[in-house]
Length: 468
Image 1 (cartoon, rainbow, N blue to C red):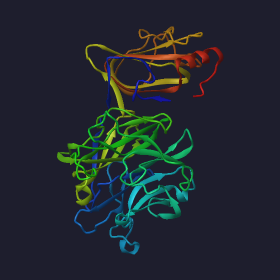
Image 2 (cartoon, one colour):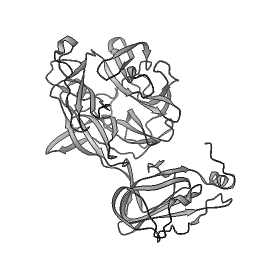
Image 3 (tube, rainbow, N blue to C red):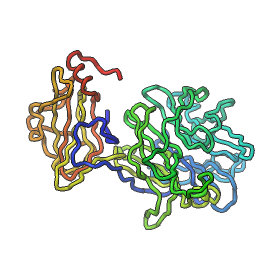
Image 4 (cartoon, rainbow, N blue to C red):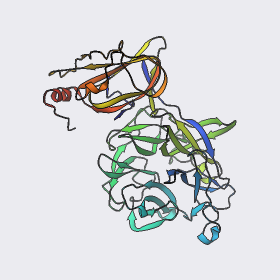
């Protein structure tokens, strides 16, 4: 189990700590020189360890008017090059060696790796096609064993005339595939549907809208969501800063991102109401990029625990970017392990303190992801029918007993001078408290079960586990 700090729901104490995003660092920029990738892209790790990027874009020199679908390859997931798929592209109905297949007027909504089906249909592509003059929209489903060769599932439709801003993740709690989508073309509300087979779906259910804390006239453009260590993290795309005119919100404005979290894949809470990866001028390798449309639609864990975000970004604003291709690129960002949200020291000359709610400790070791000076961890516990969780110090596991830590570690394992270990806490309800100076904490990780005070009292008396 991993505790992140998107909210204070699982905390009892928080002093001299402010909440903020982690800081994504740009580590690579990709452009194939053929197309402008102003649209969402997807990256997959292949069985041979390489990474394949599937992206779409329009011609930078106006040689083709519609979107095309391309592939790039990488050995390390950071540096990509166009992938040569064909010696003779014309024989496959395409113009370029790294072009996957013709898609005409269509747009790719999302490509999803399905680990719960036959390998011949391992990848699902949700396609959007439209005849705008007739308001005729089609949401087709394709399958592929390798991301290159695609077959349309006849009669399958992933939505009822929804536009292509969709993402899919597997809900481990409910054992189904979840589609995060807007319900209809031009309708900027977010909801979800569930499916087992990409042919039959539950009814669409609204789960997220703009509210009074958002920018004036801002709209929700969609959300990329993914499972992360037993929780679900969302990256809402927010359309804002357009002119207040009496017409559809289209002709200007930016799209950038926030963060959201869900503990069950169904109920979502947005976090800070400010950009996570935001618009504006950014410099990489001495070159300045002006970024106004930002699409995050792939997130990967690297082998060392780092988080990589693959982002399509355009120099132009909403509207002009779609009509004037040639201004989009793919950016790769690195984020520290678990560092979507941090709690960091607010006043540097004061001690920072954080204490969790009660947890049933199941065994093993507790690790903490933090940067800090003079960090210590103590264990507290409650007993009997103590429904308010009044707690006392666990013998031999106090702050004074803990070996002090200063430094930067994604998996600091607290140790105690008394020789006490977490093994003797098995089956007990405990509270972990961390004290530090000039620090920043990202997560706690261990084999524990979060529990609330009355539930904990019942567990201590009868061993009853919570059902909700």
